[in-house]
Image (cartoon, rainbow, N blue to C red; front, side, top):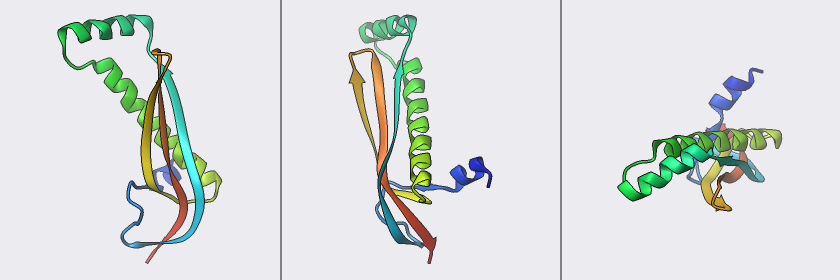
Length: 115
């Protein structure tokens, strides 16, 4: 089976029930984790933004990419357990030593089928 196609068809939802689907088995909690750091030049540029204001586009892109990667890892973790969906997905974000950002996507891996 094509892994890209499988990941694209995989359902990830922030709600606990999926309209049109029935949860046939709950497989348990799964997560995808990413820790990223910006380089020193980006950190310097971002510190100037705190003085003058405005969006820090480099950080925005970094966090967006990190969330997407965390969701992909979440999907893989659920698939390893035999799931075809994740319900109740949430993000948890934190900083490590004021140098790195941690993004965790977590939820409940389930097997669903169309009603």
